Amino acid sequence: MKNKNEKGFALVLSLVLLLAMSLMGGALIVISAGDHTSNNVNDEYQQTFYVAETALLEGEKVLLNQFLGPYDTSTNERDKTKKKLPDGTITFNGKMNKINYRASQLDKKYRLETDNICFNSFSDVIGTSITVVAAESWNFGKLLTDSFGNKAQDFKAEAEKLKKYYYDYFIVKIGAAPFRGSGGSVKKKANNKGLDGMAYRVYGCGIMKDPDDPIVVGLESTVVLPK
Image (tube, rainbow, N blue to C red; front, side, top):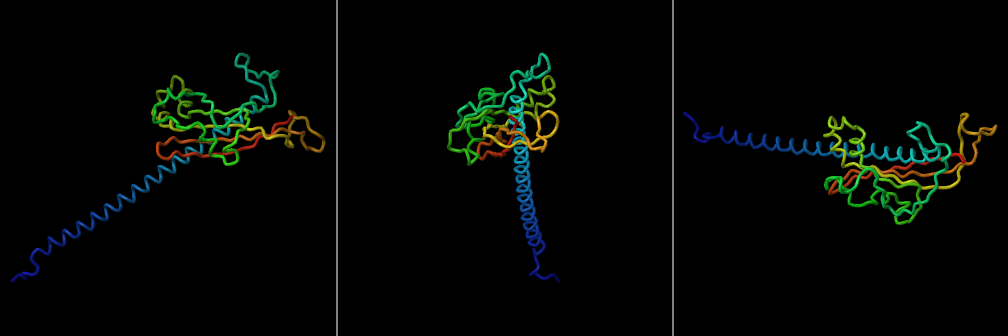
């Protein structure tokens, strides 16, 4: 004879187990989504850091090109008659010179709303008016697309994603500094202490355009050139 008190127990137990498993599954989905979002943010920050390193390298290249003389593509040699120590001649308050893009050339979702976002990320210059050697802003994705030339279609999708990244740099002339170097290209004293040099500071930024919370990574480097 069956106990009437056990009637429907299996159905109730099944519903309880189903609810428990649903809650566990929902919790796992939430945790996984959070980890995925965190990984995406980390990846974007890492990419922005790499773009900031590009900014420093390009800024340093500007200094060296002026110091060694502009490169003449017709002769594949540098014009040494025009070589000079870079001099700060541009009054700068944060407005960057857009080199490879204009606002009209980029989709609205990729456009930076402020020109001085890089300038404002450095506390030692923010709010001041300084004189710089150069102040340039580049769109990283467009630079890659232009570099690929006829093969751009093969990398179009990846380059399109990178259009939300920019690198900006501005270069400040610091002043006289001791210079040490080696090799025959620099005239040296017998004690291996270099001649006086001129110091420059390169401020570089990687910027990831985001409508809600842009990522900005600022880096600095100091370059000393011999007089």
